[in-house]
Length: 196
Length: 187
Image (tube, rainbow over the protein chains, first blue to last red):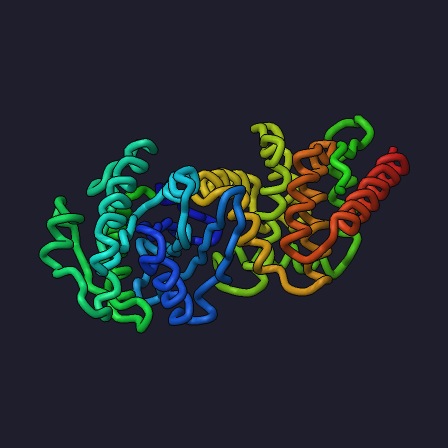
């Protein structure tokens, strides 16, 4: 649900990081925030809600240039930490132009990954959207940990649609921008046909 | 505990109300100047310079407060005409009405409270904070009252920019008094 700010001459896209608790969503967001140019980003906002908090910031990826004279501003959102309340996850998905599912590669988190990806599909469907129709990529995070689940297994468990997938170790920044760029390409392709 | 009643202005013709809001808004020459410069810079450069960004920040805060109790088509139209007039017609009313529609989308996509927090984060320092509250409150007063939901949004904005409820209320009361005085003094 991209919106255009005609006065600022910007196209605004909301990207949501989704995944089980402690999978590295906040780490991804923080890495992108810290690596973005100061004059091209807003402040990182942590906003308390009734049940938890939402973390977000926006930035202009200057290297993307413009779409028919409009700059593209990405708003990156996540619900960090252990989120027990589904309502918060639904709210943060509202109006999403793209979703990055962050999976935890540790064997002990396999069940949580599967539960979370199923929950993502359900919550998107509840808001009238569909995985695969909404630009969507998967990041297999924590690949730097010992004894991680093989990629083939993760793929079979989490990526039946065959969407673009990326390996990452978000703590050290590995794969963070590759994932975001992978999703950005899909989002930009989708908005290119928008009337401005 | 913040008081959440409605601050009502005398019921007069819209033109007199608009005159009063414009007079109070531009009574501070410094504010009048940055509003006009910001509007002109927005028309010329989008959001590429500081004056434009400051103007658009405060405009969005005004929108978020004024629309907290709904934002009827007539209110949008009146407010767009008023803002165009007080900024030296750098931005025509039609452009401002389009901007309000864009901001409707921003709220739907990103959330009202999230936008308030995000935009408020660009306000730096106590002077800019008081300015932001003043402009937002005056924009909200343009329909003749600062309704309880608008006042609530103003308190929330105050919290984001580091102003207490008491300070926000004092600013709002002071603006209401000035608007009433202007309306009484103008035939």
